[in-house]
Image (tube, rainbow, N blue to C red; front, top):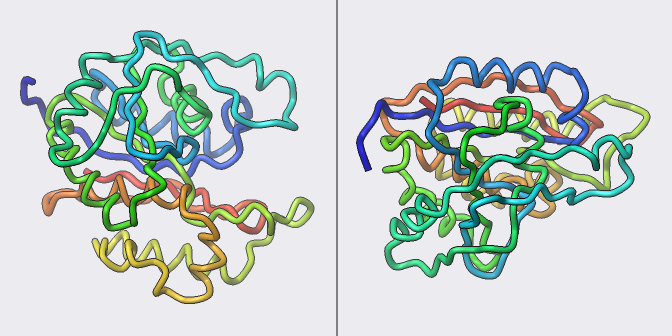
Length: 259
């Protein structure tokens, strides 16, 4: 692969799939951040919504748009994001993971953790996209170690995006009261402090951060994409937060740019 100007890495707090079709501050922020990044050759997304036994990377030529949700307006189910895949890049990614059992996948596609964001960032859907799954058998530290092997992609024109939510507790959502829970605001602030300070170890060992962390991360699939993004930070990379709202009481929409 030819070395290019190093691409930044993003973590996107993606929240509701309705952000794909509603005009709001999150959709605007995702659109605006894309305008600051030189056009990538390809995009690698690590989405909260693809968990597997073992790590997998999509390798099909034309990934399908997956509507992995229910109870939303029919308009949302009609949305398609027909971005091409990147089979050669997928094989290259598999090769980067030395000592890890990572396989190419021909069955998944692009779930809403990916397409709801990319539809705002790159609405033409003309940039090749692939997804990397979350291996449910790995510990947070093993995920970080795996993520660090993706660093060469940043110099090969690939934009890497982690898509999840720092605080994500669906059972405690406040449907009729948008005020954030104190524990959600506390953990979101703690995470922000560690993100800005480059303290990946504390963020990885989130189980030691107390009750606020336990309530904010009842399951870790939405949190792990943050670790994938932060694992790719180098000492030369600045970090900026470009959205930082808590919605429905228990969902953090914080998004971060690294580099």
